[in-house]
Image (cartoon, rainbow, N blue to C red; front, side, top):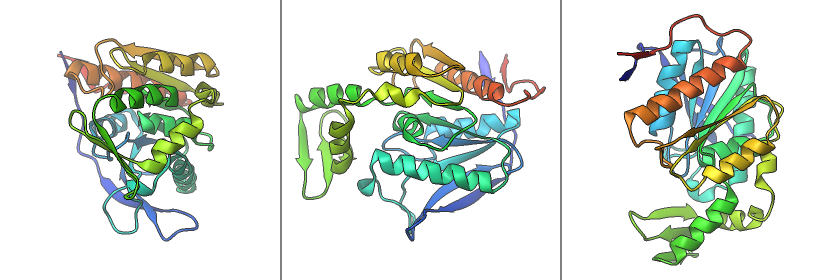
Length: 271
């Protein structure tokens, strides 16, 4: 059995101005800008308190990283609402975040993102020093999933600018974002993975995205790595063992992205 061990560290609320607007992006910095910084992105819809950015933010400082977990939208004043966002909005905002972090003096800037957060990294244009994609979204898979949902129960509220899916526990997405997927779904999405920095692709073995993550990996430039967590579904929250495997793979990869690996023992230790 493994344990996630971490020490109490300072956390600071950060407001990142969005150029050309009166808005800002809310984020939480753990530790300080003098260390390599890992930007942590949530999926859709979610927040910086979702389990993957939250626990990764605790783990990586034990390896000598600072972490910046980001809210791409939230309820605070002068921040984006999800209803007004496109994937391209997220990608542009990530570019803004990367430039901001570099301006603070961070020696290296890396990123990790889940689902739509992973696709946000792929669509962004600012160069990173390495990234981890946790079961990243792919529009071809989204099209198949949308078609399945529309065969069950769904409603589209065009007046409110939202798509509401009623099956299961339900889901709300910006209608503009749904239409954006239609725009991109016939493009070779995997070409986005041809970055000039290290990429680790982590696929959920029981998720619908597994073959599409493989496509991303095959298209990506070296150095790259592909990991399948066999018993995981897309949320990657099925068990402690799955979470620990994901965290360990993430920490190991980001360590490899640095010029020198920290010599401290991993906080994931056998008990």
